[in-house]
Image (cartoon, rainbow, N blue to C red):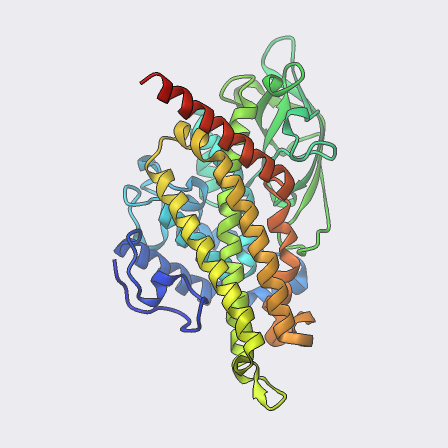
Length: 432
């Protein structure tokens, strides 16, 4: 598909298909979605972002506006929208049967571009999928109307103070009562995004013995025994990062997601989506930064020339541009593959690849953020003015590198998964 040029005309500031170049991935509905999300964000979000940062929080009223605009349904569902959700509004008027992984990509690309609003949806985008994929219909019918209307909010609670990437060793317990009607939950979770304002915690708990086999997923309503406090993080307060304490919390047994012992597998499937979503954020962050740096380089004079006239500066832009577009191409390839694989096959074939792509997104982001900051000079260190978005992106990069699995762990996972797939392929060949 070939589309008309859209957005910024500066090099690498937009995905290549925004510039009018042909792409095999995007259709008219993707263009329609892009235009609708950008217009809504520019009218309702961008003018307010600076004030939210100063206040240290996003205005809670905006969440209901997001629901009315049709943002919550696609954010909660990811790459496909259930047909039974057709009575909810979907931004851009996209039909549920049209929605695919590239719509998800476009949606997040535009949300991240708008500024602080993207952090408002982290809990929904990682907390809702286990409910959608694995929960009983009875539980779905109760919870989804609350969270898709914007009345209540949800987050994912997996990470613990002593168990980050090592999910197998989490210690939060959920013990069944003698009558089998409830679980009693005790434990602590840390670095839980959106936890301060969440009404539901999609929580990985230990219902059995040691290791992965003893882990289950439990939806815990905010109730007596649930305590939360903010955790200040480098990227700022808008994500509402939270420390959660569960002390003798009584949870109905029907709030178990799926069956006992399946929580580790459910968490791993969810991690693949979370890692892909982190890549989406990284790409738009890089494009925003290179746009602002290029604008500055075109007008800033030093040593009798504009910065862009100096070969050393062009070298920086060339290196940034090739890495950004390469990451975009890899991301689009993975999104395409996810569209053509079952969830089970995607988890088996793409888990390691997605982990490595998430590592690459972090590395590219680190490089782009630092180079753009150096091009801006002192302006890149300031939280206001022409360098403010680059300064904010520079601070946000660790939030792209660590969550979802840090670099070393993800690289090791990627190699182990690649070797596993290689052995399986070799074994299959030997049977031919």
